[in-house]
Length: 581
Ligand SMILES: Cc1cc2nc3c(=O)[nH]c(=O)nc-3n(C[C@H](O)[C@H](O)[C@H](O)COP(=O)(O)OP(=O)(O)OC[C@H]3O[C@@H](n4cnc5c(N)ncnc54)[C@H](O)[C@@H]3O)c2cc1C
Image (tube, rainbow, N blue to C red):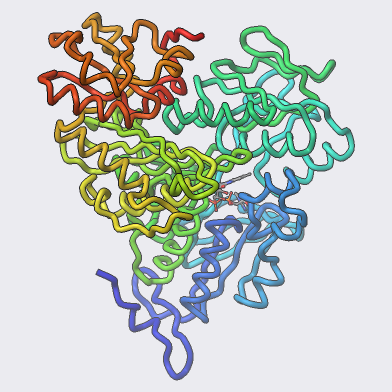
């Protein structure tokens, strides 16, 4: 139920009354101090003003800018955004003019005196104490730079703020580096690899884990790596960094190899900015973020918090985690300000919905990956399809890979991942909405989505993936993921792999040991197949294997499964021995 806007804040003939401070009283001009002036903090300040015309709002920001587009920084470096000024969304003067918010830049909050309800700040004019009735912390995080030999050399960078971007840009302009190494294959690292390529720099991405974009399942990371390589970025996975050598400009890998590196960018994660909160004695959560309740209140009822520094509930797993993304930070800023000023609002958690452009391709996800779902204790199933993003007969159709992860027990959707050259963001957003509504596969299958040939197919890929999942759960056409096939092969149960692609496709490449019967010959030749072994049917993408499963089931083969996502997913995920022409 939506809570009504509190009567004591509703506009009156005399203007707008301020909220009541905690503990009673009728203060009409509460003092609100916000520490951190970018995504969460700037949103909180603007929302606070919309709630109360009387509140005295002060925004304290350590850096020289407030409210800038940190998500846009890689795109200025790639020159897709041409004007640096487009990244600066608001200025202290603009905040003062429009919102009557005092924005103090180049000012660091260095101490919170909770008993005295004041914050000690250090800025261009020296130190001062700012009193508050309510305090909002929106300090974000800072990128981790591993303390390796050479990590502080002049050609080693990070990218988190506008000054970081300026330094990097100036270095590229001045020294025209020929080679760059991006350490870390996460979202920002990949955006920066693309930016470097677009500036003409030969770029390598080094990722310690087995695949880039490791928050997604491995086969999606592999698709992303392929796109990077296709665009001239070298990708090295499963290897760490040992040292940066300024002399000779090389980067030494953990396996002893050396890469040329005129420029090194570390993008290996973000640590929440918790020093201030810790020394003020605020409680830290189990995942290492600042603990807040559903009203984004910290362990001190007069201090709220928002953004990268807090830990929140994952809406699917129910676990408390950190989700350092701009959408949650902005929404939390809005909610924190509302609660701080006496307008009750709840924050119910996040799904970790995210999307990234990788040259011409897009990868995105929402909710839990297959791996994360299993780790969270779900009996997780997965359906993978590779379909055209709109009607195949309409020019410009591009293949879209879509994976749904679901709970085998309840059929509830748990997560989705997608990769392709068109239509990814739309599917991820539809599925994020489905997750928010706690939909089952049945409900996703029924979604009545917009269709005309230039946009989709009569059954959208979202519907088709849900059909596949439902067919799996009902036993109509059971699915196995490539990982399950691999486990069966390793278990010694001697499953049969039946490849139903054409002669040419099979000859080009197939899983070692697979038996080949093209789909159209299966009805005639299936008697030769054993009925006492589990049969994993595989085709290119899963559709022909689906038909094959139905043919075999109708002929009394009891234990037949479709390898979901087919050869495409098997090859992308890796780990299989292939026989190739
Ligand atoms: C290059 C880049 C690309 C990104 N791309 C995306 C994207 O595409 N999609 C997405 O969802 N997210 C993206 N993000 C992440 C997103 O920007 C963050 O999740 C979001 O900005 C977090 O908001 P926040 O308010 O918590 O922290 P921030 O926006 O980091 O702001 C925190 C501010 O607090 C200030 N501060 C900290 N301590 C103090 C102190 N003691 N005194 C005064 N000021 C202090 C800091 O200087 C900082 O400016 C990207 C981030 C970067 C850096």
